[in-house]
Length: 400
Image (cartoon, rainbow, N blue to C red):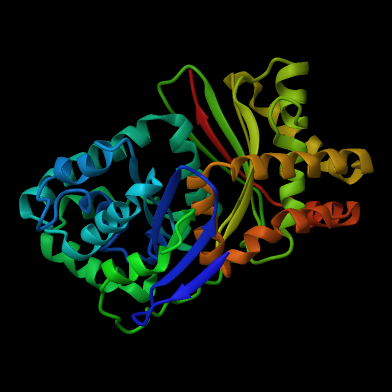
């Protein structure tokens, strides 16, 4: 891995890989956590707007066709903490990928007509997420699990805010956050002149560094149950626990626990709820750890009559973590190593992971991840399970 910082503050991370392809991904350190009450949804809205036209390519098709006509992939996403745009092309088209990304970041038009059009599209997207229980259950969990932290607000934003957006609000938000010293670019491939091309294309003016306020999130003091009725046949349940951001050493034991409980079809939750008892089809666990927040969750899609039984079984499995054996621990670690390294064979996922770790602290930590996992002991797992799995928030989307 190589790193460089341009004079305007833009950081570049280069990971050499012998591939036919190259991935260029730009991360802007802005997400829904940065929004005030009158800006909710603006980070995600801007992700849409940057595909809508530049001075030289005034339409969405003119931009996307530049990559798609050479067989490339061009996409973007927004999270609570970051907005990312990536292009994957054959390495001979590296300069084109850099040019397109620089163009949308320097020369986007933000036309009034496009703002109006995208408002309708984003509002429909919000409806789609809210109508789909497998998505909406996670929105509801974060909203009820966290009390002060802005991650309790959905990335898609507030429908009223979106409906009242103006071009001026969009441009002002863009100008504030989309500055070179708030961006990081990752390049994965075999490109000897990786820095030179970015230096040439990303001529952006450095501005004062963005100041962010830290939020103190209280420790959970009681169990919470949040129920909503839906006109659906199944009932969606999640048991969630507040944990820690990715900077904490406790994330590694939590990853081991997630592997033990939720991996594929051999994870303990799958075995107990689906294989043995046939209580659920979609079942598993998640360990979410971002730069400023984290949570652990066990989920199952079940029949309404089985809510109490499933909750009891999940809590039993969490208690059984105190009886984990060295064999269980080794299997969980081996799963993580294999799954993680195989996933990083995908150059786009590798580019993404470099940026995710850089957002937390340092991209170099990505290469230490499996080493840290191997250092986790049985005592670490038992201590962490006891520490974080005391008070839960349960989400129930109650079906018929």
